[in-house]
Length: 294
Length: 247
Ligand SMILES: Nc1ncnc2c1ncn2[C@@H]1O[C@H](COP(=O)(O)OP(=O)(O)OP(=O)(O)O)[C@@H](O)[C@H]1O
Ligand SMILES: [Mg+2]
Image (cartoon, rainbow over all chains, first blue to last red; front, side):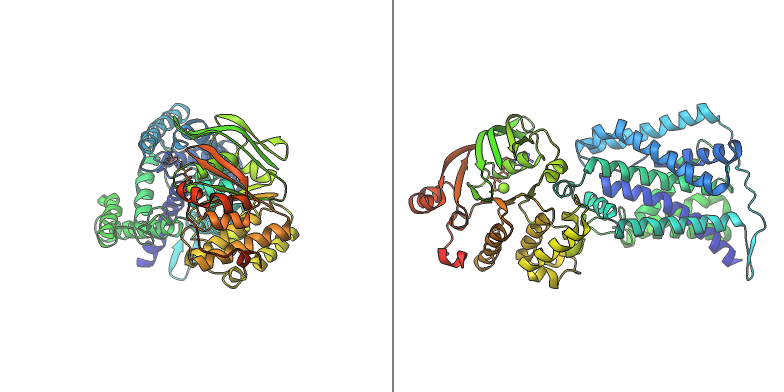
């Protein structure tokens, strides 16, 4: 039983990690905390629903196209709405405060748009993955296999991209110091769009991956945001490996808590973990106090 | 190579540069001198596009660049090495250098230039796999100069390469700057508070004061005639004999 719970916890956790990864990526690249990221996740899930259930694409293509769509959506949102504020300086400045409010506003707008298009009722995504996989004593539904495999693959690709490509190097440079990156000939505004697009695509992947096991509904972004947020803080805000580690910990912790302590308080465990970690290590597990980013 | 005419710029509403005229001929080393807070770095930022130019014009290779964005100016062949030795401490030495070559796509040329930079600064080759945050101040200065060269610029602007370094290290770095100018035919604009060192290196000097060019002339004459006045303007005069630099 424990192993089943562990693997479910890891699957859910890696999704938190995926969304948290986007939040951390945006934070390190743009110096803002993106409060509408849960809604991007929600839109990703709806894109998946439309593409799979209505347009009839197969699951991998659905996943891919939903990520692209959410990426484009993110780039547009960043260009049209956020750019004016972030170009005044993000982070802790007055413009940064405006950015936080702007993010909340965007979350509400996106929820309402989703409500207008898809209505208030939750819908499942009817994916037939076939028989569960037997791993020794564990029986694992294939949807969880997809979650684990796709998430790990996306994280690996992101890692290779950031560490071993020229563009990835430029993104890390932009995250660490924009003026110097500019002076290296990097088109900084373009890289910022790219960062935002990639972060939104990751959130959308999370949405499409969770859609077969959870109802897709307009409010799903909110809970995901706070869990992913908890994950990012537990791991150390702005740290990419930290976001993944934090996500896994939150997922496992809440699944075990729900299984062995009380199922009706499932959503509390993430925050108990958060408070505990912050008491022991205020910078988060892999966080650094000074802002030596990316 | 570079010509400024009546350049004005500043921060917000605060005007710092109040009409700068300056020329940097092909292949020359030109010194830009001046005390603390007189606008030297501001001028470099305006040239490299980090700050908008309010009025006046900047021509690079005959083309106006005062409306261009920083990465476009780098592509045009003009690179700035900032004050304060900003490397990327979380990246390795070699990653820093490769970042300098971001605007290029000629892989073979980049490889060759990497070896050239290692030739100028062998210590960087020794430490190429280490995080640049672990380098000493002098080594970081070498790294940021080398990183600038990796863009294969026609002209490079150096902002106070001697700042906060021991005299022996300064001499070492200035020797390499001299070699870079000679071997690569590089045009160089060097901003300095170390007046004497800069004038030994350069052929012509400008002194900026209060956002205006206060004084200009041949470096030789400036050393002889104006050392005291230059020092008075806020510069420091290092005790280094001239033959040491050109050896
Ligand atoms: N980001 C900024 N915002 C507002 N004012 C600034 C900013 N940066 C510099 N200044 C002001 O502009 C003036 C010129 O600064 P600048 O950095 O160009 O001086 P500098 O000649 O490079 O001096 P130093 O030798 O100390 O580097 C100074 O009075 C400084 O206070
Ligand atoms: Mg300066």
